[in-house]
Image (cartoon, rainbow, N blue to C red; front, top):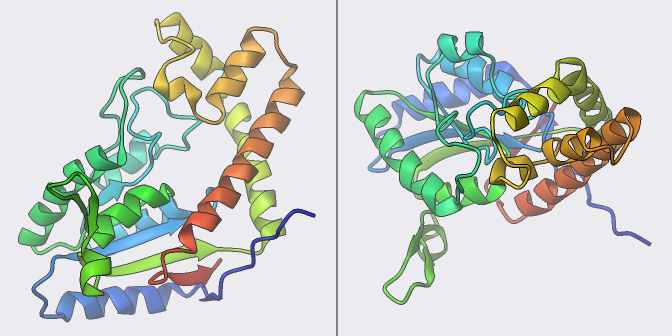
Length: 262
């Protein structure tokens, strides 16, 4: 029998409470830089909440999504729309070509100076995304020691590297899977097949790093005649549900997350 992942202990989502928590953080006199994090499994509304909070507090968003870094990979990554990118400045989106590789170390290296610069301007940056390893390494302050081993500020000191509010969005499993299924159908309705066709026609290799992402590799298989469209949509939904399970498993090691049930 397959093991089941228990639901998180979560309080009901309340935007007013979130706003008040961030207002309180702004007033804290801290030696550490300040940060707000919005994480959760795929399809839980992280980007929408981050956008709303960034507008409310006149700040900027740092994407913690390992696929959003790639240029022209838009539909299958549920990347913010051009209009949303105009509403609020976003960082670490559309910065790499398809064949380039991105790592947790590169994410932290790029994110830290952005966080510092925004704090110097009196703004609390918002990190939003679902790549748990990236977020954990950032907020816990992982660095390479002289012997190339990882050193964790959090494990060494008992405090996060940043003075951070870390919110996790969650829902009951049937609701989450329904959200994933609907999102998958919407991606194909919004033109995922055409997006992949155009990427391939533009010279992107089917074996490029970005093409190995969920939704893209299955669509390549469909275009090569390896599956029907209905089979492809089903495969993408199943792969995304499996990915959500892995995300939830990863988040369990991050005991400082405040879980909010959407």
